[in-house]
Length: 445
Image (cartoon, rainbow, N blue to C red):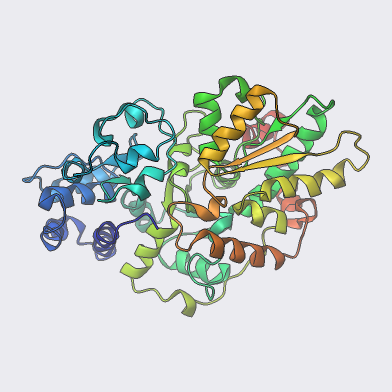
């Protein structure tokens, strides 16, 4: 989607070397296969560094083999996660405002993107819009697979949590059961659907709404699954942040619960989102998810290992409801909370009125309306990507196809309402031995 063919080919070659135990020995050969591209060999070396999770600081004489140990030993990918390959950016001949600037919600400095303070000073939302708009593919997010790979090879239990947008991302013939088998074949201990934890978050947000919304003047802003939306609130709409639900995103909930059950494990979130990489490292949330991979990155790992996903055996486990699965598209969170609220508080006098924003520009416009007091709604949902998570910058299929697949997968769920999901009940029963304060910490920011 936003990934250049060159970038993905470089990463694929690196992934191959990881699984053949030849990374340090052979990585210096990679740049010479791509040196005719923009920026020359220096640019390719920088792309290789970013593909290993490192900063793009290479010069023409940099030996990549000397950087391998640093990449493998990373416990946490350093900020910023969105980086600019200056060797390529310098070759941009566009006059005036560049495409990366014109598409950035908060870049109004009129500078070239590589020296723009938007990324460096914390204003960057990590939405990925500039990545897909850069005509030379100079802007990219660091890939976290190399630091993760040492755990996959070491016997450390590594659990994958897969975003609700996963349906159809690896082909219509690739079921969750086949994907689970494939992930286990490359070293993961097991795979859990984040949609299961979306069901848990739905119960919490429905309860929160029921307790807080007592008058027509009250409203609740959902944190849903979108860190771009939360970043907008925390960085640019601090007064509205007070109305944000205290519930964490399903991704964070998944990591916290898994680590409570398996204390010595590592957790990896897999989804279509660049901003999830930043969310996992937020000071208030870090530790729940150790590494983040995107759908497009995981596809390259499967290609590197010649894994035929459709030929994998079924290893299916029914985990989530329709409500949790449809978190992946705009409106899904609102619908899940609504149908749950109808069950837990059927006699409410204050009607549930939801409104959604679709895409980062719409999110900003909606928050401006709330500030002006011109909005009549009491449940506010924002999705930073158009169409919701299915429209993420690292999705493998377009948003329309992603939405269709999510809806189909949602309708195949055994449970319509999160409140009826027996997996949630069993999980809550397992966790009920925890102190109330300790349990609350699993689901609250």
